[in-house]
Length: 214
Image (tube, rainbow, N blue to C red; front, side, top):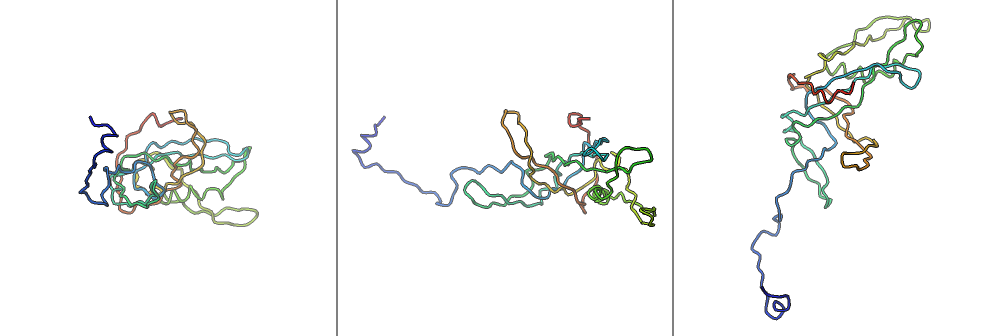
């Protein structure tokens, strides 16, 4: 084996015949999630009624969205470590589980209940119902002495939601938690809301019991 000094005493020759623009290694597809829209199906639906902020009561819906194979037609852009903007297709996200933020259905109190109503807080739930094709009905009620038309919101069931095709809008949200390596994390990926997936078809989804905390 020649030493460094021996190499310096000779004319050391090295050549390169490759493309200057060719990468020196095969790029690894991005595995992390990216903010944007993902098409998929609702799974692992659960709900529970709980007090909220000490004065309201709501049924809170939690669910996941499993990214569909059809997500391959979606396009995403991200900035790599060199600051370069790269576009990829959505095929690598197929099968990923996206966790939705809880959707609150604020309850109206009956006579004798000790909580307040918060009907104006039901906008997100109303939009979820509409996008799933479960529509509210209208009725007239007397509110503050005036006849007022109100929307009677349906109570979504597991069957209304599970397997339904949706477009999930994914956002990065502040969240303090510890991962399985013991590292402190400061954000999470959450589905902020879902929209209709016009061309999507409903499919049967199996419930993952590990994803049902209550």
